[in-house]
Amino acid sequence: MKYGIYFAYWEKEWDADQASYIKKAKELGFDILELSCAALKNIDKAGLDRFKDAAREYDMILTAGYGPAAEENLGSADESVVKHAIEFYTDILKKLEYLNIHTLGGGIYSYWPVDYSRPIDKRGDWERSVRNVRTVSEIAGDCGVDYCLEVLNRFEGYLLNTAKEAVQFVEEVGTPAVKVMLDTFHMNIEEDSMPDAILTAGDKLGHFHVGENNRRVPGKGNIPWAEIGKALDRVHYDGSVVMEPFVLPGGGIGSDIKIWREMIPDADQERLDADARNSVNFLRHVFGR
Ligand SMILES: O=C(CO)[C@H](O)[C@H](O)[C@H](O)CO
Ligand SMILES: [Mn+2]
Image (cartoon, rainbow, N blue to C red; front, side, top):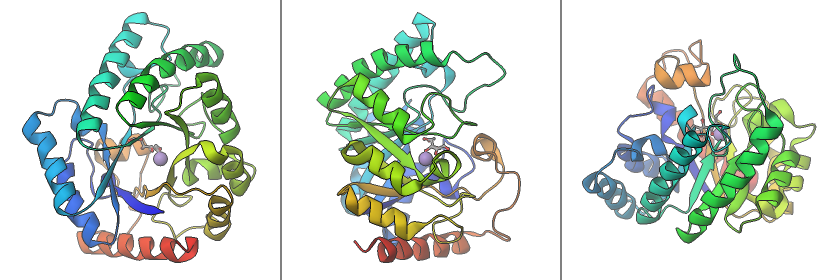
């Protein structure tokens, strides 16, 4: 198993200098840095090469996450939105291929966070999204990227709230590159049993986010890590385990993630780094591989 961390742990804005976290994550004991595709939207070749060179220099794996904007919604009833979304993913997937990134995960079948002031058409959006994710995940397959659909809690998404729904969706899409992605923070809200959800995802599990019930680093809350590790063993999961802690209020990230208090008193860089380092050691110990 390889262990990673999402750059956003240290940042308040999505458009931060993400490449600089490759070295930091390596020094803290991680194998992977997860980037947000926000960094790849308007990037030039020199910018892409900064990521590529740093990953090579520090022998780090990169994975990519994304919370698509409303105009990148593959489930939209507006055909011009879908056309734009397919163009957007085609461009991003080519950049991921160039960067040797083989995993893209997130609410990449819909948009995020959802605007619940508008009426929700789950059935219609599901059907459109299955069709359009099929198109995009075929392109992903050609680029060598697993297209991992993240199961989100009800407050952040409405299409895939449980592993069971995600398995059904992935079966309907039916392409080799499309996979289920689980996140312990969301599972803790929606699933009857976290181990059972992992067993349900089974060999369709393509990416795994870890975070506590309150999104602090693993080891500081009440998620049942030992049981989760055993379930990952039972499905022979050998992919990435990426921690996605969010502890800093403020900015676009604080607002999207809904962090309205200081999760860590006097959270300076040293404290954040020490927590991340201890947490990845904790996960390696509890998962035993
Ligand atoms: O768990 C999540 C949102 O709650 C997602 O993994 C990320 O925040 C999303 O992909 C944005 O990059
Ligand atoms: Mn997540």
